[in-house]
Length: 197
Ligand code: GAR
Image 1: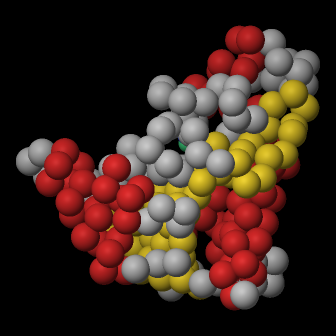
Image 2 (image 1 turned 120 degrees about the vertical axis):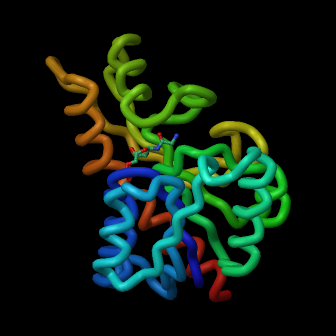
């Protein structure tokens, strides 16, 4: 299975995928390219170090959002991956991309959907909201991407305990270590095995 991973920041989830392929936890999979909307993303360094092509496609480099959306779709069609993995990609996926790759786009979200998800819930904001609400359990979700924000069918979820004295960044790190870096590679492996059938 050929995958394209889309990133915006640190790329720890990308790293978990690279490591998962290297150590055999993700079978039958290769990363064709990494797309970042942010040319300074550390994720691009991780890609380069693993010998993977890094592509920068930023809405800032286009006159209109439609122009960016067209370029994004064109690039994906050119790469023609079996699966697109959104690993901390903070760009709205254009409807045309969802249509062209229906059932072939997955996203990792740092909460137990349907809690703390939807428009405006990304990165640290998710954990700030979870702590503000006082939940005792949070976690992460891998889901298919549809036209909505975090509304597509759920593939895997994993719960993580909130601990006394947690700050948003402490909680974020625990959710990444205990849930995201586990269920994202696992979901890709599951889909790769289905694809091989
Ligand atoms: C991760 O926690 C991911 O779940 C989150 O952004 C972070 C990216 O970290 N994604 C979202 O909030 C999407 N709504 P990373 O660049 O180190 O993988």
